[in-house]
Image (cartoon, rainbow, N blue to C red; front, side, top):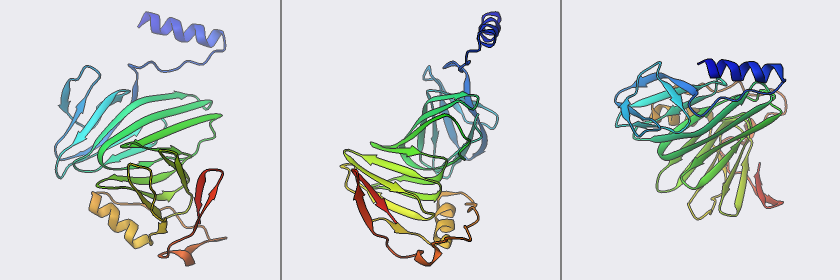
Length: 236
C-alpha cells in the first residue's frame, strides 16, 4: 500500500498520468440472475455475486436461464445473456485523457451500453468470436450462433472480419456475417422487434429517444443499401 501511495504522489508531483495496474478492478458485477461463475487471473472459479470486482483477465460465464450485468469504471455496462462467456482482457481509464478496453465474447450473447465522454484517446474493441467491433460511444447487441449477428441501438460501430469492414450508424441497423468475413445485406429492425429481442435474451431494452429532426424512421423495417467506401461498407 505504501508503494502504491508513493507512486501516485510521484505521478501527481511530476504531472504524470496514473494508470490502473492489471490487478486494479475494471468494474464490478451489479446484477446476477440464476447460476453464473467468475474465473480470475489464477483460474480460480467462484459464484458470481453482486458487488464482486471484475479485473482485467477475468472471465464471466453464465449458465442456462442466468444473466449477469457488469458496470465498468467509466459507467459503461455489459449485459451477459444465458449460456454466454465474456472475457475482459484489458481496461484502462486515465481521467478524461485515455480510455481503452478489449473484451471478448467466446459464445452466447451480450449487450454493451456506453456513452461518448470526450476522451482525447478512446480505443475500445469487442471481439465476437473472430469478428472485431470498434466502438464509438454506443449501445449494441452481439450474438454468436451459427452466424454472428450485430444489432445497433445507438451510436456507431465499425465491424471488421478478415479484410472486410462494415459500419453501422443507424438505430436498429442489423447485420449477419460468418467467420469467413462474408456480410449479409444490412437491414433495419423496428423498435418493437428490438424490444422483443431484448426480452428473448432476458433484458428490458431501454431504447433512447428517437431524433425528431432528420429522422429516418420511415425506413424502419426495410433493407438499406450499402456502398464500398475506402474498403469500408457504409449502409444507410
